Image (cartoon, rainbow, N blue to C red; front, side):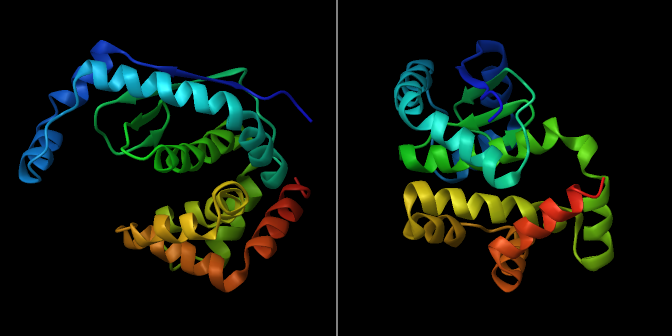
Length: 202
């Protein structure tokens, strides 16, 4: 097994202020009668997730690499914690959550994106396969077919089927729902094995 990266949870005052002052975020929070979290709430959450990640992180990082058949290239991955945002993978940025499991499930999603980013040069044949077989699907849907296959196995292994079901139930983007429907239809292991076979042809 290759090395596992160190996930460093970080708070940046300047970076957080971008989200805190974002008009769209402020409107959403105001419409939902919510306020942007204070600094002490964000930093307190950061300390809490650091402690739990020490226990579960190595296993999850190892599973991401083993199941995807991709190697971690970076020695360290910074994960910025902010009061509110739509999570994204580069730079890895996630908001605080009321439920710790919800945070880690989102983190796993973004970490699978991360390992794909770190191995992007291997993807040419897989992208060709997606374009050929799912040409009528959006780029966002195609980009989550393999991801949700790996994601589903890891969530079931570490949090159970019920957690995966609740995560899927909260998805409101049709492209993501469609990707999961393809995974259901094609089969998790079938997609993962197809991915590994295609990458072996490079």
